[in-house]
Image (cartoon, rainbow, N blue to C red):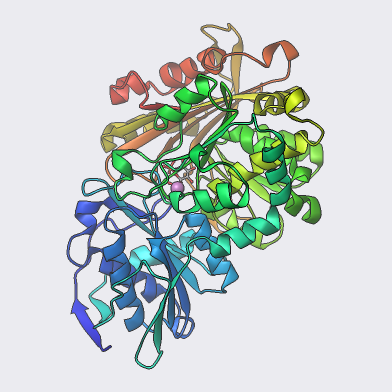
Length: 568
Ligand code: VG1
Ligand code: CO
């Protein structure tokens, strides 16, 4: 190939958000839009490291994935990259990419995904850069990339670099091997890693010894379709008929590949009808998970807490021990009850997986999670949907070592209820108001932040409209995080109001949308009374929700919204 220089001009708004750059496909397809961003990534990487380096490339298979991959080949070759590892058909789940970067000592990865955002010609596209530890680039790097995008004038691109067939495992080379593209199996490295973490034989035996145990996995037409059969059927012995929507689709079959109560309605309905003992789903790029028991919803904040408290069931943690636990700020406080009880370090970080990586690299964090259906550990540096699902299978296996089908088995619901009776229960909910105009959303946030800045909220008492409890504000702030490892500071990470009984209300604007604003409001209330552990969540939180929406934020007044778009 030869290197050609493409003259270009900056595009506005190429600032990565919570998890990379996410934009409408129509915008991304504009000439040089993606090229500018990719070149900006390479401009930030040190030249000596880039020369001859290995970079992993893959995505969730959404519309424009394939074209973007060819473009990355050309720009990478021209910028001195030595080798690209690309997933078969361009498909790699986000956690698999993290595993591959680590297993193959790659310099980094370019991940093509807008995660749970809808895809297709009218949907979203996304791109993000991961570092050599396999984790998302920290803010210092994403800010530097953004800075490059604001002044870029040239893209370096290689002529004649194109791989026609990404569907066959093969190696392609140019300029006497100066640049190589290797098409790799999407699952091999990832599955090898999972096998070192879990006791696959044990799970397989549990499945075999409990033929009445029914399981359903919904890949939501996202990338985990490429992993489902290999892992659940070939490795764990679960019938293939238990896996649905496992053909990755460019527009997720017209769906919204977000595993939650709103966007996975079919699975939720089946679980509510009692059709399966365990139901689960993952998002477009495979880093999120939802796990459900029979007629039983597990809040993601509870899920990570239960996984942590059952860490001994999982060989990887049983052997290596628990170094520490962490959650993002808006995630319910359930996990710190476990950290306290087990006497391990605990960390509260801002929203977004990039904040967990430093703690893991420093060896102080093992298991972490976010309320947004993200759960993971230091086996990689991304959250991991399939890993979380296997954690639950392993926990079920552990609790059922001595059961067989005649006696039935200890269910997911029983395991969670045992957890609540030991640690107490954090009633928790999140309301999302999607696609609001930016100005009213910001006005509402400002209304709340003024009450925080002026300190007028501290000591203020609210009376619950349904529970008649007095909620007194103990403290409030605009969450700021100082990374304990590199001491970098991230401010404005969410408005937080904490009451004297430990209840919390949090307001944030989403950082993953492609247009407009999404307001998220989070509610968290802790109970220990045995008689109060099995209430309906929305009823139990009614007073706190009213205080948050009506008394403090006047959300309806500012945004005109009466009802959230999504309730978790
Ligand atoms: C959302 C979630 C956050 C998650 C992020 C990326 O961010 O709230 O917890 O880390 O998505 O997940 P935001 O800024 O919209 O609230 V994924 O699966 O989209 O990479
Ligand atoms: Co995702």
